[in-house]
Length: 495
Image (tube, rainbow, N blue to C red; front, side, top):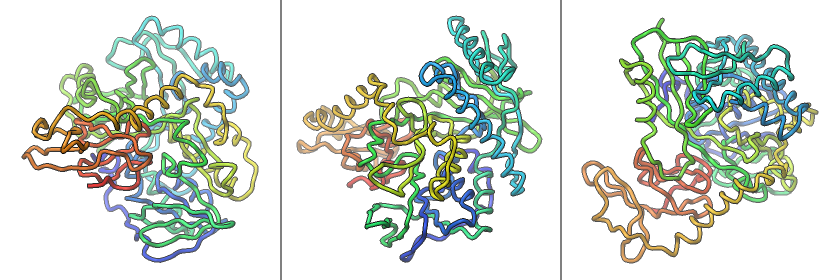
């Protein structure tokens, strides 16, 4: 479903698709916030091309909360415990700089994207979590004096036990910001191509060949800015992270709304902010995450609507969509070299749902790598690090889920047959002792696919809420008739 942010941008510029062989110094794959930030910071320093499989900022970059913040939940106590105080200080510092960097870009390029400085809050409704808020405040104020403040009440119509405030954070319209970057890139001579899916990348001597729309782009350096890397080996990122999907709604609540923006520390995680539209404030609520490809006990849209109507009984729902992001095992993004074995191939992934500051950080780190410059924050996000493997429990769960989906499930024939599928429902059924993915629309029309992910062969699960085939191993998504819409699966399902 189209997000509010994408709906809010009218007369988007269109870009051609790749229709001949091209040669460039740098090929950036993905025209979301990371790819565009990288292109913006490259400026006129080198020749580059940005390619996008669909339209600019149509996926995760156009479906986020629009919160530009260094407050990534109750995160700094975790960083202190896992990496030490100096690491936590540098993480805070680079994210605060990212907010300033984004504001500077908006000012320098005259981007109209509703950028506004506000306070951000993490809150809890559980008395037993009050100490977590207090502990986080102590760590943050150790990093920067008087940055954080604990409050016993905030301006939300919920029963809040405690909250922690970060002052001078920001929010904006992420899609308008994306197109502001696009305009700056084009003015500087950068080339952008839409509807140009990279289906294969090959290394030949000291260059790369990227296969796009039956043509080839030859590049000295390549940036994978696709949210989830579409190359599996030797990076093995599919062993180091998983994908999570969140629900989002925009509502006209018919009454006065709050200032600032908020996210809960307890589960289910729910985030709130306001959007100013034609002199009126609308409410954006995001939450009820689930691991992509797993069965949902309840309908996330309905749960989110129920929460909003508990707060504002007259709320009218205007927009709804889902957003997916990669979660790294140690909760830190991977930015830099894709692998020691593939020189001049770079990656940025695993943003853990804090992609607005992280995409700006990634753009700067990647450009410094491309131009062979030092970056003082590169080690924070080192993409080839092995530390995530220390999170043994999550890695064990990922391996177990992949094993079940790739191996064990292939020996189990489903109990259901095509006549067991109801209208508006999808499931895997037994047809002549073969597994077939079947979806029946509301009129009973049947769509059939081979329910095996084209990424690494996991058996798919049908999401009956969003009417999509989803991969429980690595988060690929396909339409009910098999079109690949979310990476890492980039090849359509077999009909």
